Amino acid sequence: MNYCSVNVIGLGNLLYGDEGFGVAALNSFRDSSSFPETVRCIDGGTQGIYLLDYIESCDAVIVFDALIPLDFERRVYVYRNDELPAFIHRKMSSHQMGFSELLGIARLHGKMPKEIVLIGVPPKELELNIGLSPEVSLLLPEAVREAQTIVQGWVSSPAATA
Image 1 (cartoon, rainbow, N blue to C red):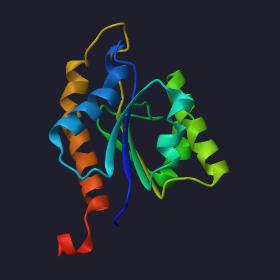
Image 2: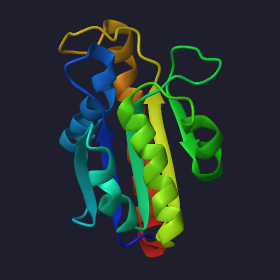
Image 3: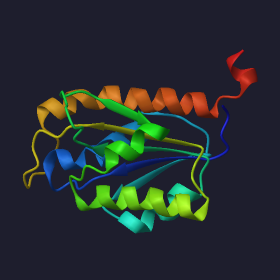
Image 4: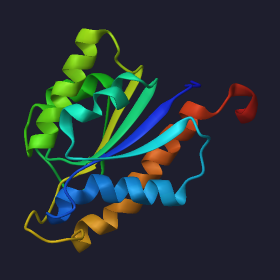
């Protein structure tokens, strides 16, 4: 697939340890990746509804976030499109509820991206503390590689991959 506009969004609060995973992953993605201008990196923090335009205005979106699957191991999780609704209703923080609501509003507006991917890891430490735990820090490169691979597939033209 070749999408004209791709948004990569990092969610989370850097003041609460691993809750800042999404923003840390976004920063690492931005610093280690070279993509065309059609790929935008957005530090979403905990902005909630203010991120609606970033969801509705692109062909494809990747969201990095700290997440807690129903049954989990400490590893990188990648959820795509139809896998999202059942998962994101498990709330961990106010911005996750905002993301779920954003998708619902975009769906009502008829402006859903063609592709939505959520990449995250379960947090280990959620105390008032700047910086990721060693366990989550070890998973950061894998999460970034997953996003790079997905985005590369989205922005590569068929002629470039032949």
